[in-house]
Amino acid sequence: MPTSPATLKEARRLRDHFAAQGAVVVKADVLQSADLLLDLYGEDIRARAYLTADPLRGEMVLRPDFTVPVVQMHMETYADPARYTYSGKVFRKQEIDETRANEFTQVGYEVFDGQNPAAADAEVFAVIAQGLAGIPLRAATGDMGVLMAAVRGLRTTDDRKAALLRHIWRPARFRALLRRYGSGEVPPLRAALLNAADPFVAAGANIGLRSRAEVAARIAALRADAQAKPLALDEIALIDAILGLRATSTDALSVLRDIAVDMPAISGAVRRMEARLNALSARGIDVDTLEFEGSYGRTSLEYYDGFVFGFYASDRPELPPIATGGRYDALTARLGQGRAVPAVGGVIRPDLVLEVGKC
Amino acid sequence: MLKLGVPSKGRLMEKTFDWFGARGVTLRKAGSEREYAGAVDGIDGVELVLLSAGEIPRELAVGNIQLGVTGSDLVREKLVNWDRRVTVLAPMGFGGADLVIAVPQAWVDVDTLDDLDAVAAAFRAKHGFRLRIATKYHRLVRDFLRDAGVADYQLIDSQGATEGTVKNETAEAIADITSTGETLRANGLKILSDGLIHASQATLFRGKRSDWTDAQRKTLKTLLGTLDI
Image (cartoon, rainbow over all chains, first blue to last red):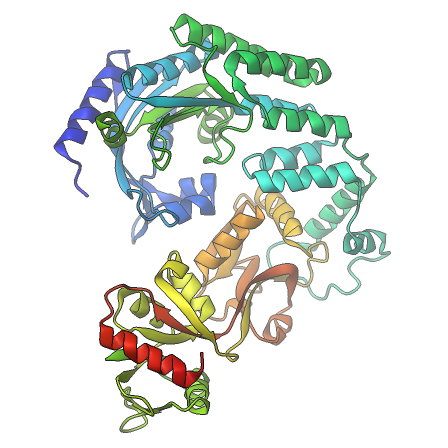
């Protein structure tokens, strides 16, 4: 669908707004190499992105968002601090809700600043909120960093923590893992495998790339895991308390500080949240009314690992979020071959701004 | 005219003809054996269209045919939000096959999707790429694995001889149709205990488009009465 002149005008207004904050206007190719995106996001992105084959360049994808190309571009120049803005179309298949647009314009603002992450978080949120001023919106926020710190602080094996962290974006599987680690039960078939004198007695010939040594290594890991002490119920209760948290930011901070008494591992993340709330206040955001949800951000694409936020139309619950964003430090580490740059950013959909603004 | 799409060859066509015949509606190929034209006896207003089973879902969805017989797996794989585009009129009790996830028998440490997920994580860390699952049922497999919370895998397209991909080292696991599991076993594979994605069978579908004529609606009513559905 061609972008309407009104949407183009709104996109220009938003991009100018971001540029006025000192952001450099950048562009990205519409066709991106699919390998990197598929490796980063897996089949979820394949289900959502338009893939096409190029006989010379291999699989290409119509850009599903700007974050990855902007991070790549930044990693080549490596200015710090740096601010970027862009405006352009992104393309996503809509298999679940066919009424949603499969190509739409995004205007983004990305900040790469390692000096003061709390201030950068607040800046992105506040700058996007200013761009949306006057529109009836509800803001939702969360902090993936708190949940990740809580998992890292559990008194259990590193393997179990790694498994939980890996599934932090898949709530059902995360929950199933917590339950299993808390119960201390070993499923009967697995118990038989672990007790077998020779687990490979009925294995037959090995086929495929996964070697017998890899199978043996996993059996050894499973044996070690069977010896691990069950996760304490009070620790699971603390994770549940974080996930179930739904309050104003000020109240949420107070609850999290209580939780940090029993779970000191989250203290650092809670201090970062406090610094962020102070920075938000300094930018005129009323944190006494700003919503905070402990599980917000868990079902989006798995690259946010700190502050996350979204703006929703107050009286149009059927619409996708008008703006979304968050911190993605780990993504820059993945794309920078070990060289990480703290980064936070967000995007606005000008078409939705107009649609909601009209009401 | 109410157009009925039926698979154009093989056992699926014969069984479909038998199924309708047993219910008083005779379907047959018109003209020579090689011709893809059909005829219907026992009811007026129904036209037989012989098509590839794989094309029937799409033809139903766009309204080129109003009724169709095909595997329930093909409808689910080929149509987005299939249940908004077609309705099941009758499961037909033949053409049964299970879409399953299978891994090498040598993976003695793997019995469930849980195991597959854990192995996928370790495999990716060791080999530097996502564990490959060969299939032609991309949508069904992806939805199934997403619901099960399996990560770190990738789907590799395989339109035939999928059971051989593991041995050939182009995939680590497969998702394919099987009726007895014999071919899987012969290729050194085993089915995950919770790896049944869909139990498919030949099914009579109707398209859900709203542009049917009154005559078509009346013919359908008569047909359903004759077939006793």
